[in-house]
Image: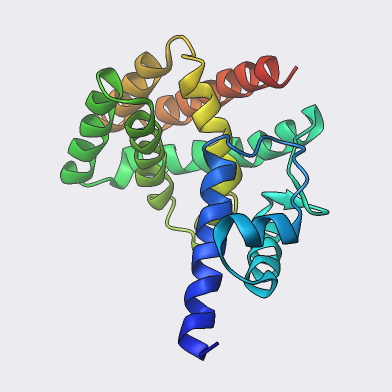
Length: 204
């Protein structure tokens, strides 16, 4: 197998397994068997092994099983998000450019009448735009490293149609547009607290 072919196989294995985890085909607790995955995906075991190692680093796999969060895991994840994203919302209300505020509004409109996958992506876009405004590369990197896990829960929240999700996004966006840093920060915190409680109900 050439170096290029080997690299392509690793990418295919990684993206296939990751997509199956994120779309729910491999639910939490699923045991991942290298031989079976290699046969299903059509690659050798080596790229499968590399893909699993990479997904372990992202937090999606633990001990060759799809990550199944405990209540404690969820609380820890959302505590970190609340700290970072409430600060980011405060900064956004002070510094976000008008064109980015328009992008926030576009993402909200998408969530009103789109497919579940489009809504999940729009939700991610909304939060990503705000996180970027924290202007702290360490905070941004921390959120980036949590993205796969965040996506899992965001998808669950969207698919189970959490009440008031769109209303809360609109309130956060309006506080940012009105240049009200403290209000934007508090709205983001309460929004993520509601996400956490909803996610806990799903898990339990």
